[in-house]
Length: 169
Image (cartoon, rainbow, N blue to C red; front, side):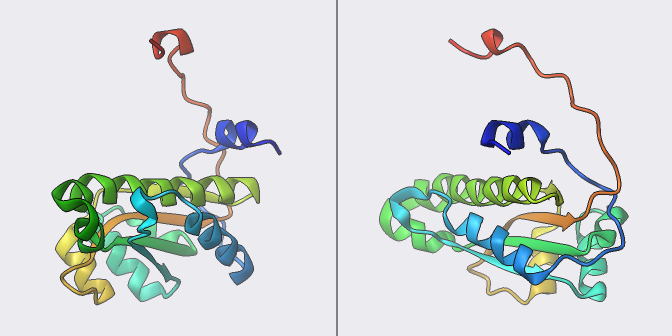
């Protein structure tokens, strides 16, 4: 499928089949994330792959009780190391550039998943402190997002998009 077709096909999936995702597919998504752009090529992110049921349950609770999250076979948590960007770019690198880089990682992974027939949802609503505790992260690490991953058990309709001419100046 062409990249524009993949972009148009991607949806936020919140219902997954009870089917495990092969480790090879997970590695493919991690590789897609690895090639995301970052300011100065700092690449100040790490990915935590979660497959254990107990940990997924804790993550769902940390995501403001979004219980459906625990049903996804895999969670990929994108963790930033803001201090590494701050070393090069100061406060702007620590805050803005770090967020941009992690967002690019997440989008690359989600598009790669769509391309191979997997579904994802980008989760940004969570308790930062609780997530750090669940994953045993150092205080210098900051969770930027969670991707739920699995085989879709729903086909959400394409949402209405604004006309291109109203978005371009």
